[in-house]
Image 1: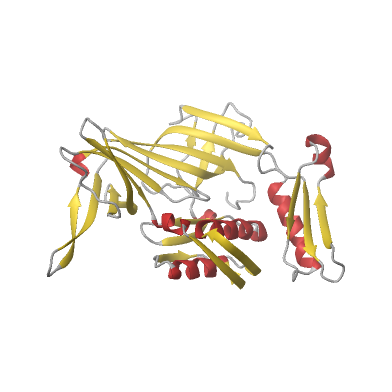
Image 2: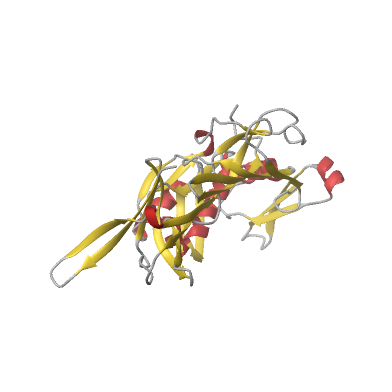
Length: 336
């Protein structure tokens, strides 16, 4: 494993201001990089041996490469020194700055339009943004974090289109990709490198077998309701209802289609695998599609399945690179 950890600092005197870059890899004790598919920025923690003080200031830019390839770019937010001359730093990618609260009203705008607007307002760099094909009739957000605004719009776009999109920071550029274009070709399974895992099935958190949407009606003073349900699953699981209000300008056809889409998305048993100590690869992050084969549990039954990585944690220690990956099963990924 060849690692480079460069830190850029701004130095200035009375006459000149310049950026100086330092290489800290020789002082590196260990590092960990974690990404989640939804709701949080990428986080890179690393520990250095430093004889005096804390060398890296808050706000310093961190650039990490593994085997010559881009791995992480972000900014230092915390530093913690211990008595053994080790300093632990925590850096986040650009998504950390989207925790700022704001108010927005978007009319006939797509997810990619929303990302561009917020990024411009906060001075963040944008890379490739996929065309989702869906525009919100209206999306009104009051005093919410920009991160929540974008991820809420992302969730709604996924439900509306039936396609899985992933929003993340790709080495300093806000990026939006369709998950099926982020497919790993290396099989993970009990017949090769997988030694530790946990498998979970549940209908506890994000499972709904009835969808009920309400549209405000100014003429009647009441709400028009639209309901779609799976009666067989209601008998089997009990009634698990999803309820929400929709924009008053949506017509009946649009709301009915939304109900059907939501029921298709939520009416399922969720399956989660936590895979431990996988051989690391620098490009894998949350949102990638991972092929998995495990013989002794129902999720695979000896057949290769594709899973969506919800969380990926890279561990760099003693010249080794491993990953822990949490994946979920998506039948609608559209990949083979």
